[in-house]
Image 1 (cartoon, rainbow over the protein chains, first blue to last red):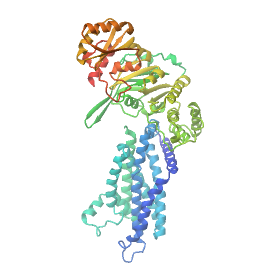
Image 2 (cartoon, chains in turn orange, yellow; image 1 turned 60 degrees about the vertical axis):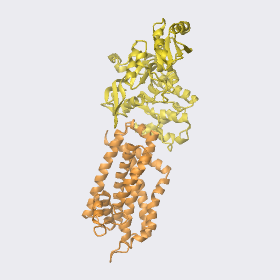
Image 3 (cartoon, each protein chain N blue to C red; image 1 turned 90 degrees about the vertical axis):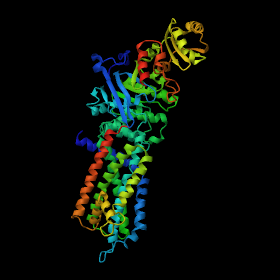
Amino acid sequence: MNAVSVLRDTELIFRRQLRLALRNPAWLIIGITQPILYLALFGPLVKHFVSAPGAPADVAWRIFVPGLLVQLGLFGSLFVGFAIIAEWRAGVIERMRVTPVSRFALLFGRVLRDVIALLVQSTVLILTGLVMGLRAPLGGVLFALAFIAVLAISMSSLSYAVGLALKSEDALAPLLNSVAVPVLLLSGILLPISRQSAPTWLYDLSRINPFRYIVDAMREVFLGVYANSTVLWGVLVSLGLAFVCVMVGVRRFQIESG
Amino acid sequence: MADSPNAAAPALDAPGRPAEPSHAEDAMIEARGLAKTFKNKRGSVEAVRGLDVTVRRGEIVGFLGPNGAGKTTSLRMLTTLLDPTGGTAVVAGADLRREPAEVRRRIGYVAQAGGTDGACTVAEELITQAQLYRLGAAEARTRCATLLAQLDLDGLEQRLVKTLSGGQKRRLDIALGLVHAPRLVFLDEPTTGLDPQSRANLWTHVRKLRDELGTTVFLTTHYLDEADALCDRILIIDSGRIVAEGTPEELKHRISGDLVTVELQAERDTRSALDALRELDGVRDAALHAKALRLTVDSGAQRLMGIMRALDAANVPIASIQLAHPTLDDVFLTLTGRSLRDDSSGTAAPPDPTLQAGSDQRRAETDTTGSAR
């Protein structure tokens, strides 16, 4: 299996999945609704909690919007596993596994579709933020979108792997919810978890949550800071998480047997 | 590919007989001792216990067995979807365990579930599938048009898959399995869920595959009429083993002559009834299913009186007596103690090895599976 055919296979699967997604764009719109609601109905309150004397008036938005982006990324991508269960049930996965197609492409073609979908949703969210009063450097926004793309790779790979392992929507939904909600809260998405604001136990718990590093790094780049240890940690954690999740996902497509 | 279907004259191989080297280059499937043991929390389940299968080029071979007999597991192993836990197989000339990717390139597989996405159009699915087999875009489109014509799907290119009828959808599934013109195609329960007309139509297409393109077809089914009508050769699997193999005629001939079913009035008489009938002239085999004795009898009509007299002499009261010519279902029942038709209900009792008469090899094999169950 050479690299060219892997790329070609990935493109083939990606195009098929994208075509299917565009044929039924309702879920894209549903996915973006929740973060927009947070932005509109919760955002105006945030500035009273996170404002420092002398800081620019829009700093609250620069802290809040990256959090919502991660929330969108986490929930948007983590729930793609439901789609793979439906595909598995229809026999699509098995049909493709009997062809010479690369197993990596079976996963990554789908993941790429999810990345594109998430980037579109994120752009809508950021533009809405601009309307609400967010001001952030373009470089920072693009950097943040790169974080989101890598996050989407991790979460959808993982979700496909778990979906294919469980093969039951009834089992997948509670599992994802029971993992996603604590992970989300412990990453300080709504309000930053700092030494000053959080009790020690909560702060320590948040330190073992990879998403926390990603959220922190995204807030830095929204503030226009690109080269400090927070951003570096964010990059390393993002890439490490993506590597592990993709490995898990590819392995699942290889051994998938049920 | 030049082989005429008749060139692949089916022979009655005894299960487990080693492959003859002279057949090697002619064989599309050559499996020896292929086995799969599933491990779960409660222990391990031997789904397939040493499969020996030879399928020659140009044959249509039916793989017959009740649910849970190991049909699908065997098929999934032969198509690289499941790793065997034992044995070897050469499929379409490639070693299953050493070069699964090569096997995938050479075979077509149509799963029971099909494998199409309802939101795709017919043409999209066919072209994508062709490209998955590494055909170029133009070549894929040509192939798509050819297959649509071959399988009577013309004019449906732009239809969404979910709007197709059951028969059309099944033909699309088969077209997807043929997109790279494989020499060997596996069909898992190809007509399950279809109405009789669509089934007959699909049989025609399967026959055409072999007759016009020389494709070797390996299909599983639990319809005996399908196996009878379509297959050159039948393999019967039960409890993970092949219990019989042959042409439909050969299999029917094995329990040849006729079937006499004698229902007794009381179950306690079964042993004395068996003893009385075993020695009777013309009775080749006798097996017991609850209160009914199933006798394999040469020229059944002429033996009825003798059977009734023998039972009378042994003081065994009879509730009813029936004479029937054998069908494949009888073959199946004789071999496995179960009827294919109601395999899920589990009402038919497995044959009790201690009560069975007859000593031919087939019977002995059934006993082995019976006691292993």
